[in-house]
Image (spheres, rainbow, N blue to C red):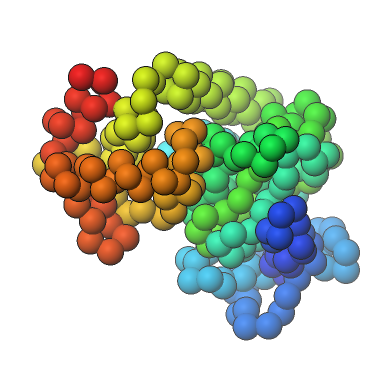
Length: 292
């Protein structure tokens, strides 16, 4: 019979003043727990694991992988019932605020982070402090996967850009889970292959683009294709990233991004309404993206 546990992160001061999170420590103030079916026996740092999942930060918490309606559309989550039940027994469902650092580049791998809700930016940092955002992770992605499998340090930094629900699994538990469930191994291989393909695409986009304007146009078109807006005559995008963060995605300066946006608005290719960006002229944006 399983036991109850509280799944809430505690902020710790991290690199460059950012907030690093611990998966077992917690803050009780202002958080209302939501009771859900027990996930399994065991305990960690004084918490019994299993029954209480918290719903802070306005998140609609997914209570169990077994009942999640979205798992069939996600590579790793679409596992047989027996494997999912085993996963339930080793996971820690955790809620994180915006701006929480899940792990840092160069840190020894503690385990994997399955992103259930929200988005996470994945970045690398040069010795001179320059940051490059490699991608924005979406729900269903497994973060820290290659490091946890290989035992090598995390190769990048993962920081939430929205309030997020994450299922954390300690590395030893995850490796044991893979040995016991061959189906999960195939899902891991599939996700690692997907990450490799995405990395190749990003390198091609950054390395072979001739200008910052071309890179920005490609990024905006890619975002519109991901959120189902690409078929609309005037796609609408919710911009959650700052100009500085967009600059870090395309390898340029914040000033250049601000200037490019101003130019695209002046040419009536883009329009902004609050935090919403409207692509008024997709054809013109595509021409910029193809360097024509």
